[in-house]
Image (cartoon, rainbow, N blue to C red; front, side):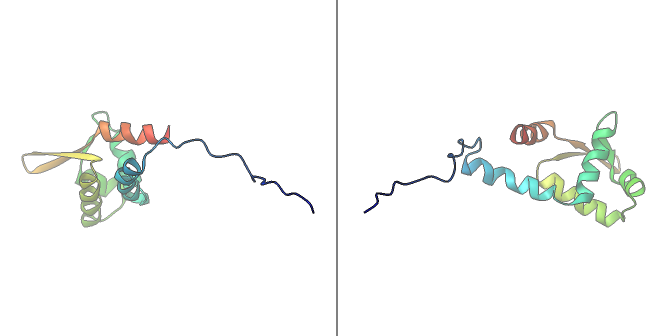
Length: 108
């Protein structure tokens, strides 16, 4: 009779950097960014000198309807990617640098 030894198919993976809890916490943010229009919005805001815009500025530059832009901004605000500030009748949206830094850390 022939003796068989267990053969592994490949080397074990290195331990992941994210814990289950961390990945569950950050996954919703990546889901929000899974929409191309939201990535465009994020990029457009980041490209501004003050890294803030009014919704009306995005409507024209991205060619999206105002309700669509407002919906995307709302989701991005709820995900913690954007902060907003009312100035008179306008609402200015700006990037939340801490949240972007967290995304960079996950991807880095």
